[in-house]
Amino acid sequence: MNRRLLLLSLLPAATAFGADPMPADAPNTLTAAERAAGWQLLFDGRSLDGWRASDAPGSFSVKDGMIVVRGPRSHLFYVGPVANHDFRNFELKLDVMTFPQANSGVYFHTRWQEVGWPSVGYEVQVNNSHSDTSRTGGLWGIKDFEPVVVPDGRWFTLTTRVEGKHVVTLIDGKTIVDYTEEPNPPRPKGLEQRLIGSGTFALQGHDPGSEVHYRNIKVRLLP
Image (cartoon, one colour):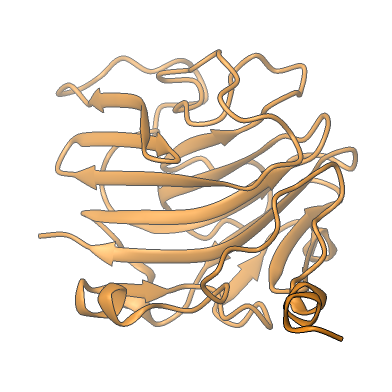
């Protein structure tokens, strides 16, 4: 086998639905530059250590360096040692891939809740083809975003940056939402606690027909 064929044979197979192959850097690791900049991993790529699932824990599993979300409604809360799982100002990055009809979300400033939809904190929506028209990158129920930026079956990086009352979300570096919370903001019924404060992160398992994959989950604390 010549050198080129050998190198090609070592590349991971592309994921179903035409997904991009794995990036050049090893997944779920930090580069020296990232470590120097203060980034810390929240997911080790092998287990759910540091995470705790509500409702239906079987909706979350680890496969091939990814958190696979598939099953009945459940939320996977970060309860690990980084910042004692209590974040105020931060930058959070995750690689995400959705499948057809998937619906999920990334909560921040939330707290452990044994059952139900989290009542505290914001949800950054993850949805590229579900019937819910609030799409990926929006702040669900507060500042929704309707265009589809990335199709199903393709990895993308979702970033959430919170500094004080200011929230910015990005997909692959493109700003999706730039939102500043007003004092005593009006909130729809059921979302009264969707407020800036502090707390942990949670990944959402929405319903049995939804499948989403997450990897490279990392956070950087901000002043």
